[in-house]
Image 1 (cartoon, one colour):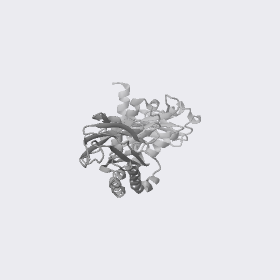
Image 2 (image 1 turned 90 degrees about the vertical axis):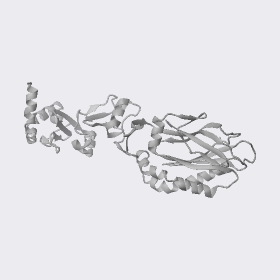
Image 3 (image 1 turned 60 degrees about the vertical axis):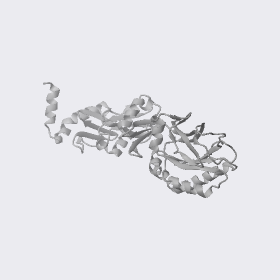
Image 4 (image 1 turned 30 degrees about the horizontal axis):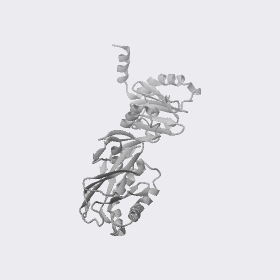
Length: 381
């Protein structure tokens, strides 16, 4: 039997209360290795003591601490130690340190690894923890030298039982059914229409002249759009198009869609009606938005459910404002949650309908014999 095995067996038989005295020489040696009283740790402010969880030891100093667990002794100090303390020391989700504080390979930051995660610090970003599947994804991408850069948030809850950590140049999201997804921003595009049936009461032409009016509500505001008037559209035909409706963080949004058949009305009048309708719907959440200090994960969690409930408000307001100069083929509102935006952008392949690429579409909207769908893309940017 080796000497190490003998020592381990002897230690296992000791009561926990005996460990501080037994391990004190290791603490003294580590302290001296780091410069002693004149080093960054300074003078001790406690004796070697048993940790509250009864499985480790610690000693505090003027400038930091030494922690021992499972045969390993490591120092922790400065802003990283402060963050670890806020999280709950060794009883935090991170557990015990498994490295001393180290310089990052890019020369900018500092870090300590722990049993179940890490804390990273730079002068610009401060100290933030990262752990679990999100940390694994960040490591796979190249840690701080990846395109994401350093973390600028702790891991926090995200809608639909998700998690997120925000980094300098993007975020990593996680759900049990998707795993970790890295993403910067998303863009939502209108990509065109498909005609499944022509109107039977067109006053001026044997073919349709449809156009689409759209109103978008996202956590930070509203916007309205009108397509061109598509001339000579027959059943079975499509009109691919491309209009960017939104670019930014995936916080959830709604797209209200008004399908019109042009007769002799002014299409821009219906765009103005849509603008009024989505503005009225948005008014109900502006007070809440005003008290939320950041855009992103927090705003998605609070406002996402509210966005999905604005469709009735938009529909009622549109009905109040519309006249009959042009025919209304149909009106609907698509609600995309933050999770749907992320998964559509990062994990969903494009589909195609008669030459129109898309990831989501309206239901079939029908009136006066006409039937149409509008299509939308969601992509990472």
